[in-house]
Length: 214
Image (cartoon, rainbow, N blue to C red; front, top):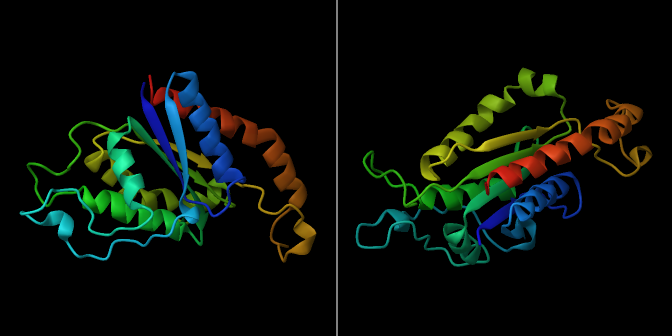
């Protein structure tokens, strides 16, 4: 049985990013896969410390020297058949937890060699799911897609499979907008967008999860 892992880069376990990841995993289950959802913010770990242990000629390539809560997750990813990474966009970038995860996963498995650029011996189908308060126009204006192209290109190079991409725009942020300074947003618009569009985004996530197994 194939195994699909999803990585939640949001500190929230029951909001937009998590729900989309759960929908993607449901699609993978429908296709017959075993699934696992990892909540990064429930783990005690740090990003890469640039010790270059993973690049040593006298050590097994792809082995991160750091030992923390992320260590067994990285090992399980190597045995997985597909990987889905989900992150909210915080201040125009991936969450710090997701950034640290990507550093640890990608850099430790990247070899400084044009002939053998990756430790992975076979393609690992993968996907990125992004959730954000921004509209699609904001994403274009601030060059968000171009900013994330490097991570997506790294995934294609190191995991040897072009990632599927899902942008979930204009997310509903607060359970009660009246409690927060948020006058630049229209709560009525946000609520309607969530009601009308978020189900479609969940469906797209489901199809991505399913496609990674097929």
